[in-house]
Image 1: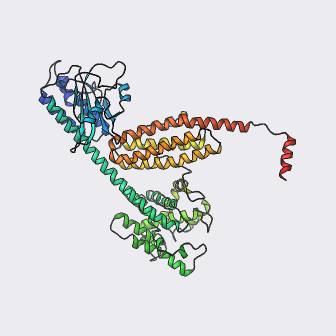
Image 2: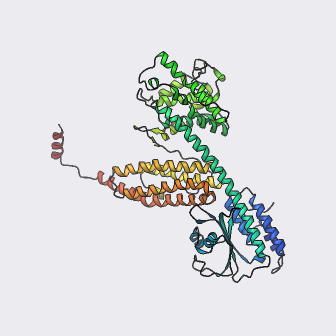
Image 3: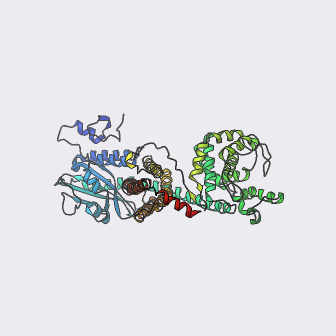
Length: 575
């Protein structure tokens, strides 16, 4: 068994110690190895740690632990690593054996403040043999000590972060120390830079792809608006198709491709004349023949070699084909119809029948399901219908999540809590404000925070970006619903509540923008901010509204009943 990077207890098994600690145990007290051996062992171990498949903060903590074990350096087995954010601040991302008071005080340090901030500003190594007036952050019971504060930079001199090592008070530099510190600065800087560039590249690609998809969705939505549809329709179709595809056993990458391509199914409607698209009544045979051309128009618009374009073209061209060969445009039958087209056919009909339009009312769920069962084997692929029936609960949740109000605006009346691998925050009764609807949305809020935590723990940039986007979308919807309820009850603290909501949305949107520029810092900052804001806002501001609402409702219930004569007069006055 090799050295375990998760082991932080130096009294652990010998196999869980790094080379410097193992050799230290084998030496008589007071004896040391040569500075040359310890330097080589430390750098080698640090490089080994940087390649291990563990969370980045654990890598950094393990690196600090190695450095504080170098005997000739005079370290006192305490240290920290900060990374720079977009606001000229240092964010604490890893530490070893720091006092909890110091951790709290130093979680964010502005450039220029204390030794760490001064090293960040000057980009020069700072050595102090003991504490002095430059060490501005302190706490009760702090012991005298020295410092190495080492700025970490990329090749262009841009600051990435700061490494801090605590030294014995009165430490006198070893002859090898300057060379070692320079080597250490380059090594740890390269480790930070490698992680920074990889994350930034991943996030940049993810956001570019999402921007491209958003642009395509807006183009599709433009076509849908001409048919009295809204952007909600294409989002529902995407989610419906993905749910059915998963039930059919498609691989995750195929499900994702299906979800991305499905919104393009009716893009060809942009080429249909308004006199047909906007006609309120039944189409004539000639008009319907022109309407059918939207499948081929869409296929021409989506020509190309990228997998997404190919899948989108396939769906646009074939989602009106029927299992028995009676569909259009080519009368394909059975498995000659591409699977993505067969899946989209069921999803599109389901959504059309379940949705009200100016020219028709929505069908009931039972009627829709009966119709789709009847069409299995004629209009629809029986296997796709079977999968569809198994995911009806998921489809209803999707429909509720992406519904439309009377103005056509999106709303989320129901929020689905996703399963997470581990929980950073847990819902408990102390978070309930006594209003079921709000409590349900707050549970989803906590779930979003746990999704952010899991994405960070698993180094999953895509999941982190998606969780942040969902957090922003949720905030707009939940806050609006909460504010409407407060308005209905004339809540006196509404203005302040709205201000808190707006500040949260603004800061969360900033995090999403900053994630690409400073991913190492934002991963720490965003989790801390959203979790602390949620707990404080729910327990203080929302709880105050819950108490107000309970009091108002109780007053309404216990209001005195008017005398019978007065009630009779009131009734008579309305006749």
